Image (cartoon, rainbow, N blue to C red; front, side, top):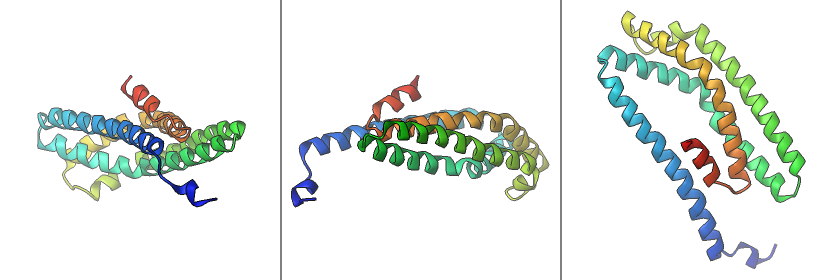
Length: 171
């Protein structure tokens, strides 16, 4: 590589701004949804708030790796896309979805099995634990769908399309 290969051009600034603004918009919308949901949860009282917060923290343990897996998938797809290895990129997305589903299913099973002792790490209130277990049992099976969302959005970002995942996310 030559020194000129590392020069930042207006095209690079435009691409960075486009990608960054789409990702920032998506993050902002998620945060706005959390604020609205928090407002609704607050109307249910202190027990529901504590149970919801505890359940969310436990669920974050279960899915925290998914964002990292999607990010690595984005890099993998981007590298293969740039090298014109399209079949390899597609195969990587398929394997990424399967891997994330397997990992998330394992984590979901563990969270469901150990929901009670995990919630006891956060609170000792029986009502909060009961609500927390109920929350975990309702929300956990739905989390498997995030594998598709995260992995395909990561793949699209990897090929340089940051707006498409945002539009899909909003739809």
